Length: 338
Ligand code: FNR
Image 1 (cartoon, rainbow, N blue to C red):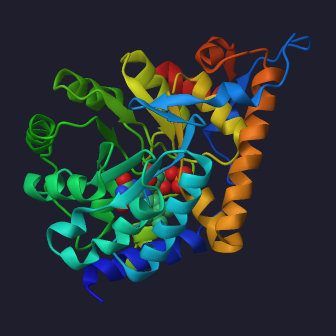
Image 2: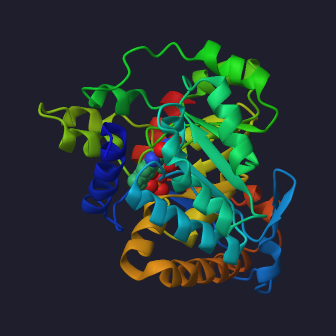
């Protein structure tokens, strides 16, 4: 196995080891005001949405994780199968490995083979050669491209990148690629200045990927001979980074630490067009297989529809109007940062 594939398999093992479904995060400090008399009826059909022009059945999706190793091939096959059955979007893990190891293409292709018509999103790092990105997009018939920004993860890895001058590469990719481009973090959140800089340089979509769920500083620290655990607290909480994206008036997805349908509702109430879930779905698959994950997603759709009715709303577009209030520690961060 190559060093890159080995790293991917280690990430999978460590993401499982550190998984904590009950982990407290910023969603717990955000509350939505609920009417006692909502005058609504539960209607699961209101969850249908359009993502990049295609119909999907829910305003949430499976966010970027795997690809580029034997274990991740099996996972991508299962995720493709579930995404197809549920008609929800699927983002694959970083395909940058394909620029150097073309034999790993299969580990991504299996998802498209299972889900030929669904919304499939390819993920790369900003320094991936444009020729390789074009090839990956074509091979996978991708509907959108995610570019991940992951400075903290890189410095937590002894073998990681040390040059973070990425804007020119992102601009070049923007010019060369004729697909929607989403800039995402990997669990440390996008700050407002960076969102603004990317917006004025032609980026239309953002995935805030804030802190509160999977922590890549913790994962890399476990792989690192020296102690870099101090990096674990450097993330912007998902609620804060979402409020920043809202202020920038960009189209954005909310992700990072989403644990249940209430967190999804909160992400949508914050103005997210879609909500992304990574490790909670991965661990459900690892524990209960694709049938378990499929059932979980069915349950979440029903529960989300029920919550929307309880909160007095009849469609997804009006969820941003729900009155929000914050616990004081989160309110203090918001007051200082926004
Ligand atoms: C990830 N994530 C990720 N992100 C990305 O942009 N490219 C990638 O290749 C990966 N790889 C990856 C592997 C594994 C095993 C996990 C669990 C996660 C990060 C992911 O997309 C997301 O931003 C974070 O995991 C935070 O979301 P959750 O897990 O808290 O829902």
